[in-house]
Length: 244
Length: 332
Image (tube, rainbow over all chains, first blue to last red; front, side, top):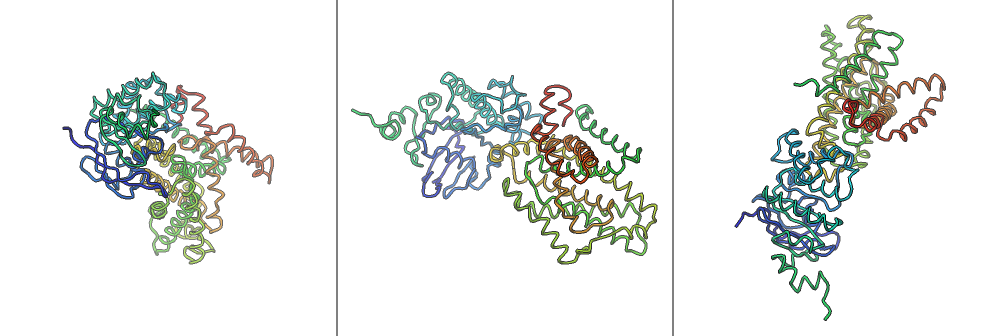
């Protein structure tokens, strides 16, 4: 059994009258690859916001490597190794592709100075296949390239936990395998735990070991991808009732 | 240290020195260049915070005014002794006090206000100059509404020739020194981890925070450095003007000119305010000569046209125009 990396204990968060997260309990182990699935509005992105610290929780606690990080601001969580790629890429548009990745690399515990961050950024850009564009302004990239840049920025700081928010949404099917293959390869090389949020389940499930099904802010199932996908509850809520 | 990596800064510094020599060598340029120096210095100081963060602080004039008052009061106090200390000591103390006062005010104001985002920060700082002005006028400290004048103190403690030299020559060199320190500060900030963090937060503050940038601390650091330098610039201005009155000291107009110069040259660049300042100075001078009395009316449309033509400032435009060439690497 590998070690526990992140633990959510009874995490709840409401917006107005809506309970976006309702007593969520979740444990993520070191090096694990996990998908969080669920329909639109299930609370997936809210869960990521809670883990990365964008807002405070109503109740519950979050532990990372045994340490209570419930009250830590986002930048400290990133520094400790929790790295996130946004659903809609948010590159620093006026900066070059390389500088975008340097920023990602620079603010982390494992990278000491700008020189080291640049070396790491170039290495990651080569891995994701954006090295030839490193001097372009980020604003000039195509949509799939921006997704790759988002991924590169998140990988650059040598994170322990990588949060991928809909990394393959809006990507042509042929590219999905390329991106997911990349994520799997790098995460296995560097022992990164990966949590991917996905709505298009089929495309991603073959790359993960575990699937968590979220519905109305609640964890409905937590099992192997096959079992989750074939369960009645998931079929009912998510894929639609089968007409006999 | 490899000198070539800092080539751009060295060239900018040499160009600035040439301007200073022109000012010293050609008496006709003295007045216009010394005004220009002050505005370029002010724009650089302003740029250090606003250019690097894109946060607008309406209270900037308060830091300059506080520096003028702090510097002036220090000079007055030291010269009131029966045997006044040497001039160099008096001036050094004036600069130190001006900087420290501005630093304390910036820490107090910044500690709270940098937690606000974007426009809310600007609104929070609006009251700063009015507040300080009313405080000085209301309580009557530092001469209250009748102002603080140090001309007589300087003449009596030293002599008339020294007074003329200090106010018309030395003050400009002191302002130039503040300018030189400011460009060095901006340069060092841009090249550091702090600079990367600021560049990120300027683009997208929330994303920067999630990517590990301590946005509140970073904003506070440059706000305080910038305000301190603004205070020291105020001390230089006080030594030059030898008098300060609340209505002029807290007039927002001249900080607006600093904003215009920064935007014209290129916000967040080191060379921008120098290029912007030169163009603005020449433009204003030409318009004043050719349309006397109407220069401000003519200046506004002229600036609008320039801002439309160069949305990223002249330096930003040049960087795009000469992308990948040597010229781009010189335009820090």
